[in-house]
Amino acid sequence: MGLSTDLYELTMMAGYHAAGLIVPATFELYARELPLHRSFLIATGLEQALDYLENLRFSPEEIRYLRGLPGLQRVRPEFFEEYLPGFRFTGEAWAVEEGTPVFPPEPLLRITAPLPEAQLVETALLAHIMFQTSVASRAARVIEAASGRPVVEFGARRAHGPEAGVYAARAAYLGGCEATSNVEAGLRFDIPLSGTMAHSWVMAFGDEATAFRSYAEVFGGRATLLLDTYDTVTAARRIAASGLRPAAVRLDSGDIVPLSRTVRDILDAGGLQQTKIFASGDLDEWRIAEMVALGAPVDAFGVGAALSTSSDAPSLGGVYKLVEIERAGSGVAIMKLSPRKQSYPGRKQIWRLFDNGIAVGDVIGLADEPGVSGGQPLLKRVMIDGRRELAPQPIHELRGWCRKAVSQLPASIRKLRDPARYPVRFTQALEASIDRLSRSAERERST
Image 1 (cartoon, rainbow, N blue to C red):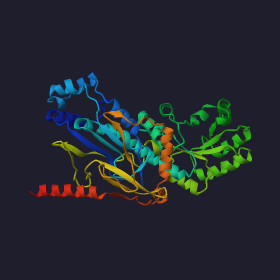
Image 2: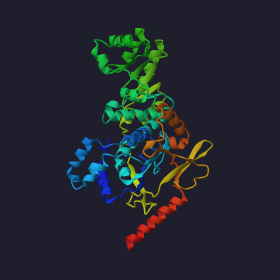
Image 3: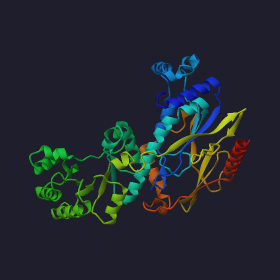
Image 4: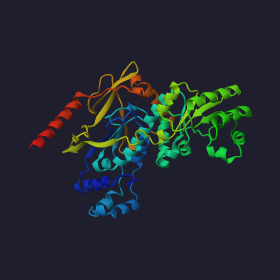
């Protein structure tokens, strides 16, 4: 796991070691801005981040590999012989609970550790947290669009690799989906599974009726039959006349709104009022919202690539920035002033304000401030001395918390189209620190 990083993290780490710069430092991980159409994010991926930090090691084979890299030939031998073999993450972590809605530039994670340790973990932490955060946030939008109808995630085949598909399934379930088609995710995270059939099943038999009957013989009342291999309406009529009692039928192509109405009428006339209609086929929150608004008799939705690739925002633009470092025995707040990439100084806390159970705004301040009256702090300590304080939480509990936390956002924030902007402000103390450091930097530039 030590090599789950970018080379420049290791070159800086070796440089810090050579310079004796092993002082405590604090980094914060956050998104600079919301993607287009998103009005909030769902913090996700903390469980994998903590597992990574707690188990971070360099194996002898990895150390030999690093020692042979051309870019590390000038590094002192003791870095490879003494420092890396005994390397462990020994710092602390503060984080927003998984499933919590967050808004840029609020930190999702705060790491304080000796500088080389805090630097090394940047790449892996961003990868663990930002991908799942993007997927869970998209899932929450899809769930909102479905208006209480179940949504199943089944985008593993569209994901950017099998492992990405597993974590996308986790994030989508945490964000509100009812189940996943990904069997590995079901085993690893105890997520309910859902699966139907493919067109190849129907095509493998001599005729469609035999294909449906054979499938139902194996799976009985749990069977979901795919209707659109040849002709959707004809398939629905065959099922209605067959005496089969499938749990559901699936529509995967065509104009689903009128097709679902026709299929519903056929099923009802055949005494299959209990058979549900499941819709799939390149769905996202926009298409689902349209179906719901038009009153399509669709009982559940299957969403693939829109979730597993977070297709509207495949790269969330998360950053991990140094905000404080120890100098002469005291913590010194620092900030980056690059145009459009400015960071904010000091270890921070977020306080969420509520009015009658509805979140009305967040305040970002310095961690050592007394707090904001009536505000609930969102960052909690989850790791100390390299050991986690937060026990692994069941995914079902995280999912429940996420649905509750999203429901506490104003309806104007949750809208798919033209959502309101959620208020986020800085405390006076943080504003003063930003102003002081900005003026100090300006004086340095002018001398």
